[in-house]
Length: 316
Length: 289
Image 1 (tube, helix red, strand yellow):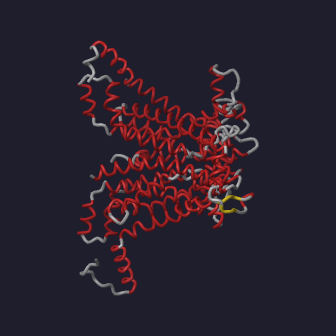
Image 2 (cartoon, each protein chain N blue to C red; image 1 turned 90 degrees about the vertical axis):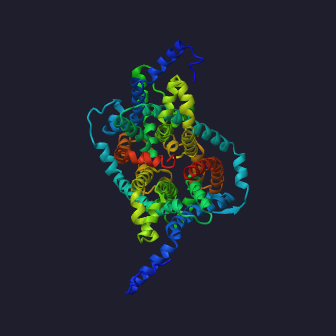
Image 3 (cartoon, each protein chain N blue to C red; image 1 turned 45 degrees about the vertical axis):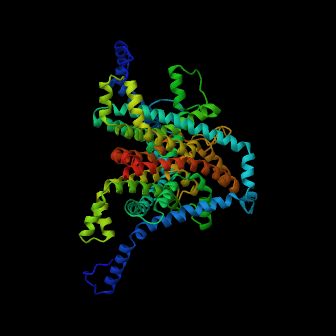
């Protein structure tokens, strides 16, 4: 591959330099991609292997030792009612957050798409993006503070308006605690849903709307027959990602309620953290992790297929 | 489409309703309410942070005597400033590492074919979608084994795992938009393949590179799970962890916690204000383009 006409360097350093650059040129894939793949192998595949291995080890008391028992943890997990209750809470949590953030995202995106002046639209977008950028544990402590029983601003507003006669302990009641956690989660996910849906809306050709108008369609009909079909791919992607990331959420529920009251908001991620990090039952925590990974990978498989399809559309 | 089966009167009546829904007043009302919902909690933290830890019990909306005392308590009495330093170091270091590793990798995926290339790319996507919570326990134990629990290095390593696949993916999508003829022209002009990448193609995707950098920095800045698991030590913990640790106190110092939250949020907010467009580009980077 090396260039015939290239001047042969005189110094040793120059020769080494040329050799290196020739090597890089001949193995460009290896040189550019190698470091990233090797890093991923070390910092991803190794821990994953460790996870699989440790899910098949029964942890002895206080995490000081382990014995090989390939199915013991899984059996314990399936038989444990607290595990299934964590699964149920995770489903409530993830679907709740999914519903709220997708609905709000759709409404906000439609509204943003109707703002004619670009400057104004950008300003709104910036303000709405704010909650996305807030560190996740700050989201949690902020909502914890707002819904605090004695000092929370929500109780104060409700009392000043006259909707409440006395303070209500939002985070001490299992149902309202779950609702607050879901709202906090959706609060930080709405911007992402909005941005993706808005991008989908903006990809719809204006001619489609003009044609619908000429045909005498009402706004609702235009929405149903023009907007929705075009929106489906981006809505699907936004929804899948929103749900998938809500399903594994840790920081927001953990910092809002810590899983309480009495494990009413203890989603799988908190459950894993409690057993693995606080109680040192690594084997059991790894088995539960494997369950969470399995569910995610099935959903991720759907997502990756969609993504690869879209990419081949673009490359065609 | 539909006016055939709708009488013209009925159509007008229905459309009048939708004209109201679509009118600027309703659109802006919806947006005002949304912005209030998004900004309200942040504004409340900001107002709280100007009160003292005692004044919080007075239950006023506005701080009666605005003061920076809570900031002082959070930053200096509790040593929170060290978490600020840690966060800046960790977010910068992991952003640099991820961009250096991920940009060339994205370029290769956009240009070259090699054995199992689709499989390798799918692997990268799966790495991105893999739930990090599943790796928390292995990471904790591996890091304990190597003695890097409670160090910044440990957190940076975890962040490279978290964001590298994302950056590879985003950068690949940006590189794909650049026609391959550009590389070929550079090669004809005597560039090596590496030079063609570094001096010709890379400058063209600089906006995309900026988007990737900003996104990685923000993600590192706001991450909690790994930072919390790997480090709860003042010498290496990040701002989100330090703010969360207020919760563990027997009586929570709400105003100081709010001050800490404001300190943690300001850099993110500034990045959003100045780089909103890049963030939007980065977030939608994987979709239609």
